[in-house]
Image 1 (spheres, rainbow, N blue to C red):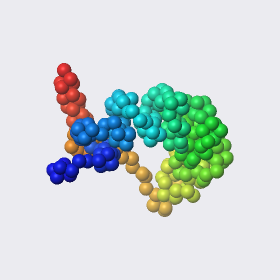
Image 2: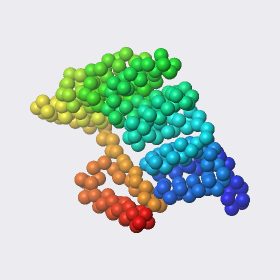
Image 3: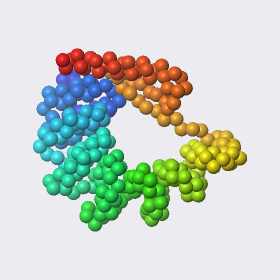
Image 4: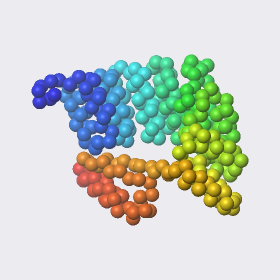
Length: 293
C-alpha cells in the first residue's frame, strides 16, 4: 500500500494496531509513527486502538498519555481505558476513570461495568463490587449479564465466601457455565467443604464431562480424608472417560520471535528453554538501560 503511494485510512491503521499484541513493541511504535505521519493521531478510532495496543504491551503510561490527549472521547474510548487499566491491575486508576466517566462522559454500558468489577476483583474490593453490582439496573439501567455474575461470583470465592456465591448462582437467571462452577468448586475445596464440593463437582461433570478439574479436586479431597478407595475410583473414571488434563500455555514475545511455554515445563524438562528466554529478556533490559543512559 505504502509502496503504491496509497494513504492508509483510520480503519486500516486501526486493524493493523489491533493485530500487534503478540509482536514486539517496536512494531507497534513503528505503526504509531505512521499514525502521526498520516495525521490521524487525534482520530477517535485510531487513538482508542493505540491506547488498547499499549495496554496489551503493558505500557500503561503511554496508553494514559494518549487517552489524555484525545479531544473527543466516545464510550469506546472510555471502555478501552477502563478495561486496559483493569487488565493491568491498576485498581485505583480504574475506579477513578469510572468516576470521571460518570461526571463527564456518556452513560456506562455492560462493558464498562465488566471492567469496573474486574478491577474490584483484582483489588479484593468485595463490598465495592457488591454495591456496584446491586445498583446496576437502578442507577445505570443495565441488566447484569452472565459476565457480571461471573466477576461477582469469582470475587466472593476468592474472598472465601463460596456459600454467598452459591446463593447468587442459584438466584441468577442464567445457567452457570463451567468457569463459574470451577471458581465455586475451588473455593469449596480450599475451605474443606466436602459435601458442597461434591455437589458442585457433579454439576460440573454434567456440564463439562471432559474437564479434568472436578475429578482432580475430588481425588485430592478424598486423599486428604484418607479415602484411598475413592481416589482410585475417581482416577479410573477419568481413564474410562479418557479425560485429559488441560495444560496451560504462556506466550512471550521478544523482538521478532514469540516463545510458547506449557505448564510445569520447568519441572519436567529442566527449564532450558525458559532460562534461555530469561537470558534474552535480561539482554533486552540491559540494552534499554544502556540506551537510557
